[in-house]
Image (cartoon, rainbow, N blue to C red; front, side, top):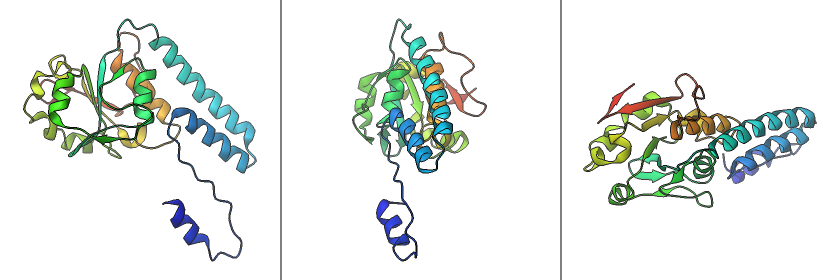
Length: 213
């Protein structure tokens, strides 16, 4: 619901509620939103405990990712038709996890991609994360990619480094579980440094032209 819709729906209430609008763009904004809610609900100490744990997990990923001797090119797809890359916190998460964004950066929102540009970018890791979809639903759209000309030639495909992520829980929604999304990306991008970070049903690896494992 937009801020305008909230204002309209509360305009005739006898007692006007305090409305807190949360619209984060980066992981740090998500942590600050937790603190804001804590202050508004007289739960500052709980909010500080929650954000401290979140920050600790973020720091653990970034510190270990800093040990990587390579930063693979990562193509993250927030939509498959039309093709769109992720924006804001998704590119930020890729950077924190030790990858290099093929498209997009943390200063921008998501935007459409041309397939020729995708092929030219030669991504080394592909993460399919259709906005709001869990893995089974996202898998239904995978043929929109695997049937494209040049798909089989991409380094990520040839090296079995294509993944479908549960975007609904871990990348699309601006909440605390983005930290788990960061951990998932860390293992996907640098499996030599991270293991055991992916929750059950959190991601699925795609082999060859579209087989799963």
